[in-house]
Image (cartoon, rainbow, N blue to C red; front, side, top):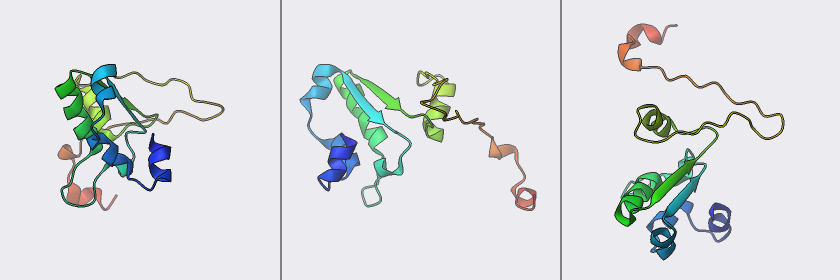
Length: 117
């Protein structure tokens, strides 16, 4: 869907607003590469297509599958806190290496000294 949207000159995040009966009928919205910035609106009203998809699945009593080998910080945090289910990819295609990800709580850092490190 994303490639077709770009070919047609449409913005892929607009597809979250489309009146698609398939969402209610199939019970599933899939957002591939959910970490991509193309899902974020740059103009008013500002929104993220992921948030629109979450609203639509709640409204339609459906499911949302956020797919990414490198999830957004927000989605990773929601999975670690138990609000999302998380299924890790332990292998990648070919010789690609799975990156190491570490979340750091910057609330405990002294930002005046952190910049000088």
